[in-house]
Length: 312
Image 1 (tube, one colour):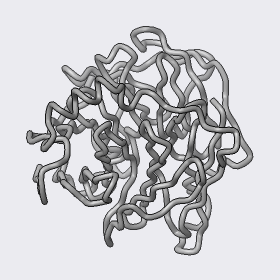
Image 2 (cartoon, helix red, strand yellow; image 1 turned 90 degrees about the vertical axis):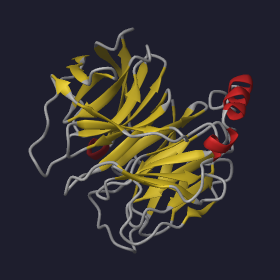
Image 3 (cartoon, one colour; image 1 turned 45 degrees about the vertical axis):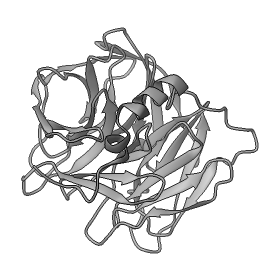
Image 4 (tube, one colour; image 1 turned 120 degrees about the horizontal axis):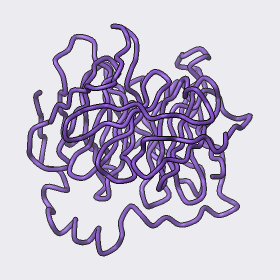
């Protein structure tokens, strides 16, 4: 693992003061309800190749590009947006998450990296090289406790990046009931924390796994109401309700988790005619916002892309 630090991150500079303010203000938890006049469709630049989306406590969505690693920021109140972070040739931004202090943690796909971007200025602050494997795919990220955890779809390991502070990346090999796909195909994709905060839920090859952050032991979550979550991609968890984006099936399945996330029971399915292979989702207020990756359409500089919102 290698690191580049152009300058210290905002979290490092502000340290405990940021944490104290976040606790006092409830940063990242309180969200205003979207107004009825807020748009439910959001254009992206042609050829953007989106896959990830994240939203914090304020009404702005951040969407990454597989084309060049750029990040686009959209005002959810107006639908208007602009390129926040320009990216560069050879980069990709797959999954991404916004921290309470304004730092964006970005999964770098085949580049094998995790990048940290300032969500206000768009400046690249830090790059971590997570693996030396020849063909990685750093896919998604969740912020949990003191680390940002990243999946590698081509390796049975999670990577824990320190959140805005100096420190080493923790590699957490996946063991137990984990089933890794054959070389060259994807395994681990979206991930969220478990309701009890003791582990992570990871979607892998149509199944959900509960992963211990202490040992890396993975246990398959029993599904009730459906046999699998085929094409499972991004995950969103609200309390004990888990939303699974099933991209090529153009649907989001909604599951009720038990307290320890050993069982997930299908409660309903969200569909929408505007879905065009939605990849990941983020919640703001009573809406779920999804990016249409359009994997089954031509992926050219002229291909149009957008994001859509549906009611929770």
